[in-house]
Figure 1 (cartoon, helix red, strand yellow):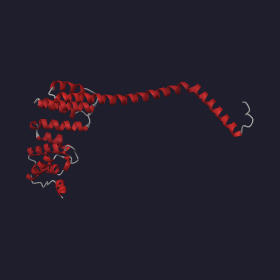
Figure 2 (cartoon, helix red, strand yellow):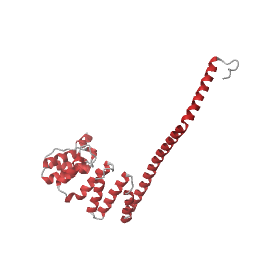
Figure 3 (cartoon, helix red, strand yellow):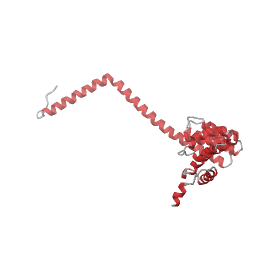
Figure 4 (cartoon, rainbow, N blue to C red):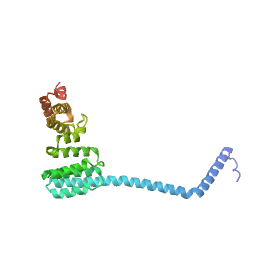
Length: 236
């Protein structure tokens, strides 16, 4: 190795030696593992590119499905029911669980408009029983199915289906609660019916005013004091 030029300090010389040694080590490492290193980097870049493409594809697919769903709804609003059902079939067959559930619920609503309650209930049941669909859609479909079939169902079936949705914190307390309370009345269980109407009456803004007022009246008939406390509080 050449001597350091005149005037170079020992510290500078040692640093240059250290850098030269590191470069030599790097060359040796690259010669031995270079292909593996390049392969690992390439694989990492491919994985990153694949992930970014997957994200982009999902966003684009969701946007496309949203456009298809909106177009189908517009056809339904224009009275072109058959075309709307066909368009909704395309959305329902897609992998996007949210839009697929919405499409099937919309199909059920269109079938109801055509007075085909049996087919509508079956369509709602498809959504309610599909574990891959988001829970809010499944719960909504179950309520719609039960409303559609209510007059033909045994009250015990209604209670079994919807009782889990009558929790005071449930967003379905109003509709599901009223259906379950009606089913309790059919079985002669006035105590449980009155209790449930009382919960609806005390639910405040969680349920519509008309439903809450009706629940207050029905609870009172059944001997349950269910004055709407939220209304009293506002009045003060």
